Length: 250
Image 1 (cartoon, one colour):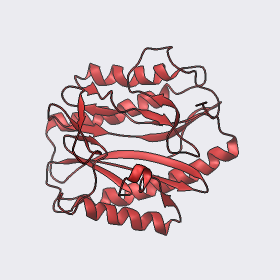
Image 2: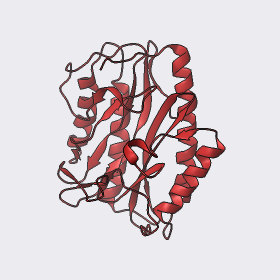
Image 3: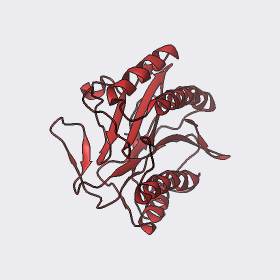
Image 4: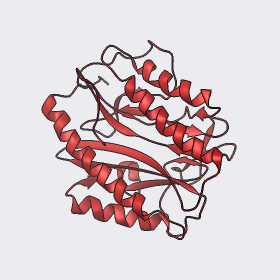
């Protein structure tokens, strides 16, 4: 499948989708607290998406049942919201959502601490994962490659003693939630497709405290760390432009 470059007007449409994604994530983040269930977060997100006039990107996508992915502690991505999953102080929860508005998608994720103080290791995990996203974004410039983006993420993560997940990667995005190219969070500088004006990428480091390996649970969605260590996930939708990378979900 070919890589689709977007026009300025298409990027503006994606910026509107991106703003809605950001408002949804801000709403949900404010609700995260001990005693809240991941289904409470789901209901709030679904209501906010409806209020803002968009449609959820995830619900019904390959039969996924919800508008959010809520991945707690050792869950990497694609955790399904549940009434039974109550958040506790000291947990971390990764919240991923997307919307479609006027035919164009936005997609972003954050990882949020649940009440109280995190351990120093988990504070560092969140800080490094968030910073690795911005390192990847900084590398997302015309003339660079997808490998430059992944290498920038990987270098920071591994320098801090963590590991990047390899089974799940970022992606192009536009009139479809997932477009070409794939955007791994690891790579060799100068390798992979060249970045061109108008490309839009969902860059999304998934970073584990321990080893990089993942496995998928019996629900066929929830991906967890194989070694049971905690994982964090941050994501932005980013346009490649002549003026440098532009975050559309900020």
